[in-house]
Image 1: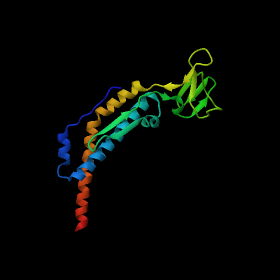
Image 2: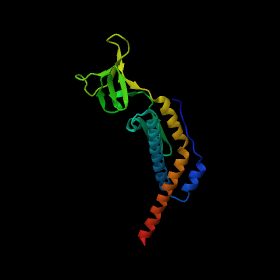
Image 3: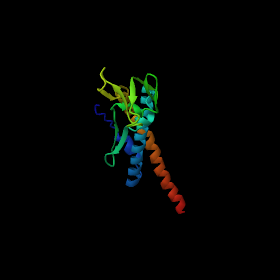
Image 4: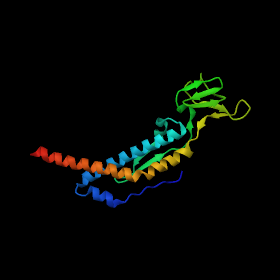
Length: 179
């Protein structure tokens, strides 16, 4: 996957944070970054799940948020194929196996050795070459992630205004209690 970098105009951010103490500004900014990352995670999960029929919890488990420093954050999405047994409850059918909403003809599971293990499928006509069944979702996952990243700046500013308002209300509330 190519690197995707979103840069935000700092003028609006500093204007929103003007008048607060340094620690209050830092706290508001960190909460904003975390909430924006959670929003990206949910939006990406919804879009990818809608297009691929993969459960949202599987997609969200592949999204990670890292605080790189006090001012920046990083959202990472793993686009490797999903193993079939992670797509939902696995059932044996007359033609093969079913996991969640997906059906895999000619597939099987090692029920005695690994009853909750992966689903296998033969790669050729011989008995021995077989592989673990996976579902490739990178073609729909990457565009959905990029769409969410494009909407990121607008969402970040909405959340930042909410967090600045929260910090201001904390200060005002503290003044009222002192009287």
